[in-house]
Amino acid sequence: MHRYLTHVTGRLRSYLPTQKRRDAHFVRQLCDGDGDAWGQLLDHWSPHLYSYISYNVVTEADVRRLMRLILSDLIQTLIGEQPIEHLTVVIFRIAYRHLLRYRRQAPDPFSHPLWQRKQAAATGETLPNYFFQHLQQFSPEVQQLLLLRYLCGVTLPELAQIVGQPEELLTRLLSRTRFYPS
Image (cartoon, rainbow, N blue to C red; front, side, top):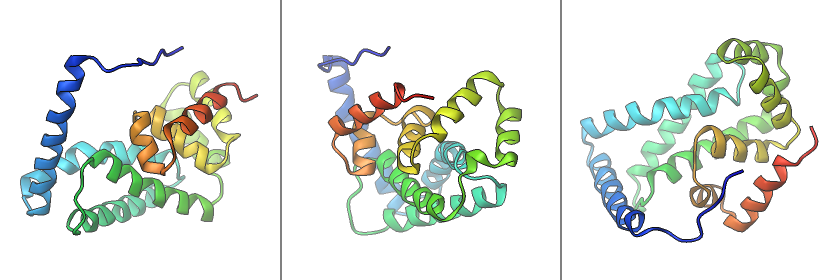
């Protein structure tokens, strides 16, 4: 079981404003069209997005198509007039919306034999099968929450911003999924 800290230590508190300043500076570089910044963005975020997308689709063509759509929307968002404070939230919010739309139109990828073979080949047998059988029992919205939280490592405050729900609600929902009968 994980134990959540009830207060932030002084060291972490001093880190947070520094990280916000670094994110703000990086976003300004992106908005100014700095090629090196765009390269860093792609180098850092492409593997995370690829992993998140590939758990939601069956074919490689769909992964590439969704990756292009998400990156295109990200570019439009970054060059828009709204100030961007938290890059992780913006990127995963865009990906979350696209994947929910895709999952509403496409059949469940977890039940597709090609997807199951791909996952079995990519990882071991026991843990992934249990995880995906457990994951299959939930709605696409809850599946996305679980993948963002446990696959992508999105923090609870970031997850709340991505999906537009209060942290308390998400905490209860994530807690209930652990006890959901499989």
